[in-house]
Amino acid sequence: MPDLDLLRALAPPVEPAAPEIVRRAKRRTVKRRRRRPVLLTAPIAAALLFAFLVTQDRQPFAEAAVQAAQASPRLLVREWKVTRVDEWQAETGEMTFARDGRTLELQWGEERTVKDGMERVGTATAAGRRATIIRYTDAPNDYTAIWGTINARETGVDLAEFKRTVEAIHRVGAEEWLRALPPSAVTPRAQDDTIAAMLKDIPIPPGFRAPAGSDATRDRYQLGAAVAGAVVCGWIGRWLAGDPKAAAALASSRDWPLLQRMDAEGGYPEVVWQYADAVNGKSAVPGGKLGLTVDGAYKDALGC
Image 1 (cartoon, rainbow, N blue to C red):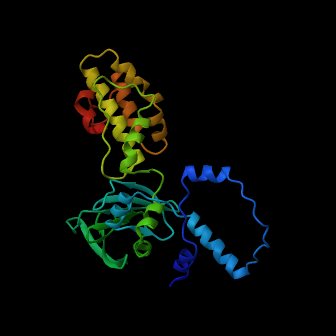
Image 2 (cartoon, rainbow, N blue to C red; image 1 turned 90 degrees about the horizontal axis):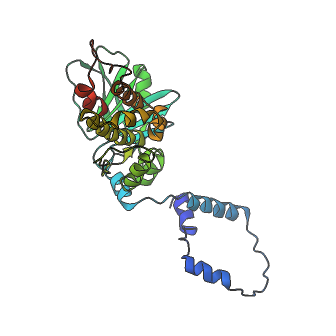
Image 3 (cartoon, one colour; image 1 turned 90 degrees about the vertical axis):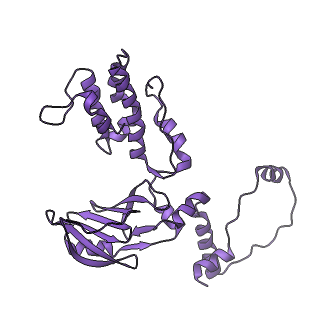
């Protein structure tokens, strides 16, 4: 039996007592004879301390999340940190890993093939499987490793460095994989509450329906873009219909807490503000040689 399993068997995690039991225990005062302290040998004390720390580090996960993780590839990259997970469910998903200013994008769920404009440049072993490494012929430092329905991509590195990264990809258990996910991962059962919090202090257009939570774990930024986009698209629709309140509501978007938080992470808020300015006559919508009109472009640009 491995040492870790042995320690867990010796000192298994104890479920906390029910509140009523704790209250009864606090009310009871039982006099006990003083006993001489039990002296522990150093090895036993160290083992019990380690077992205690192991049990304290246990993190409970919803059964549905564990089951979904078990059905997923559950891949991590040694010495890399998970910074994003999005659209994750049992059979599909995507993740971003980061290390020393580099990023690796990992996706699973759709089988990739080598097409025109791509060339095979090598192989590597990823999570115990042989992966084909390709690159686009017009992008010499843009590499993708493909094995089955999984692919990993990194740009700005040479082939030898990319191979080493691919070979650092390994499979882990469900709970270890779940513990590696970043706080920005919003699970399905947390999405309704998260969406409600995102909508706080934002003017809502008449007839607005908030985006529904999904069965996939979402990245908080992407979920925020969906929520903000639904509000903005609703107000632009009202503006096009002649609602006099719509322009002011869109102008206030620069003060929306949701977009202010997102602005530090990506460019979606800037797109929203460009359309808000265009509605208020401050600028044209950027795009194309002649610019774009609000009514002709906002749905695609904002993801309506």
